[in-house]
Length: 437
Image (cartoon, rainbow, N blue to C red; front, side, top):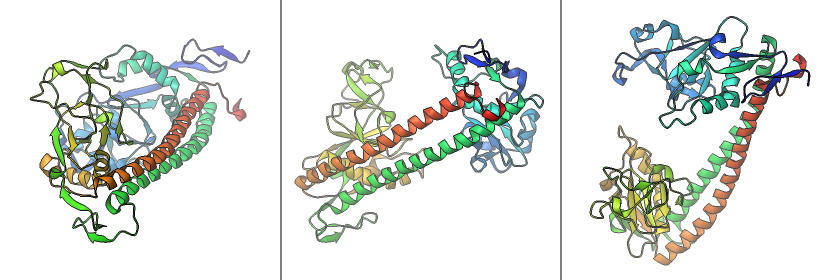
């Protein structure tokens, strides 16, 4: 007990007696770009100095291949943020708190206004140790307290961050901790990569299972015919082929002008938006509801149970079925199956062709699927009885795969929490590297 002391900081707690608490502005120069003097995307060029933005952060490094380029004049506007190897960067807005250490830095690179540069003052502080501090709960506890009660867009303000307090050992122990975490975190990241790969494989298998079943059926001995649809090929001889307009009604949702009546108190009917649709294809959790008072039936349709909802703007291709009456916003087109078309079968068919839909939509500046394109999609389908058999089969099989995916995702979340906890314990001295203790 004599080797530890109270840090005086609630979210850090006790630290080793030979560690000190420092303020980030006293150990690092903090530099960011102040404004852009009218810079627009029209100024982005194919060559020249690299411009680092928040979307260029990738697994603790900068993805230089993703960066845009700007002119020499823009690069020279702010000499204090001209980037070099081993610079420590953190995002200030957008997805706040992404951290990177620059490596393999091109000859010239600079920052946009959403990224902050930290360079240690003197030789007593290791960038890699500070990198792990910013990944840990030592930083995030502070950030959450700093933004407590903030209902506006969350931002990492430079003047507030300058007061961030952290626990620091001597240079030798900073290096030892960084080396130790490189090893331990590297092993955790390998496990996470493997788990994520397993999720990708299961997700791809589920998609291929759906496609195979809704285009070939469940009878391997069925006689086949050419569907006339390139991506499908042959289908059972007794199946019909019709355009989507003839097997379902399509209707786009909308948003009330004054948003009156939209609430999160479960009052009224669900008002579905793109984030409510997930990879299980079953829409059963909603963030917002809307009362009938808020929408005139002549302008916005109340969709019936078993409506298929397809995102047609921006996050195109997300799709699911809802088991209760609902409204949706204008990003979503509702597909309501006509007589003799089983809704779940139609759902699975639309999932099978979603890759083609997304590919076509992505050719636009803003990805969009228009209703005339949807209506012309050719669909293959058997009798209603066979549709139900196929849908029931896929419900069961997809549920099994979803269960496996959920298990893998639970493991991923546990490993991420363990990783955070491990980093926190080392950078606050709760765990020590034996050779320097």
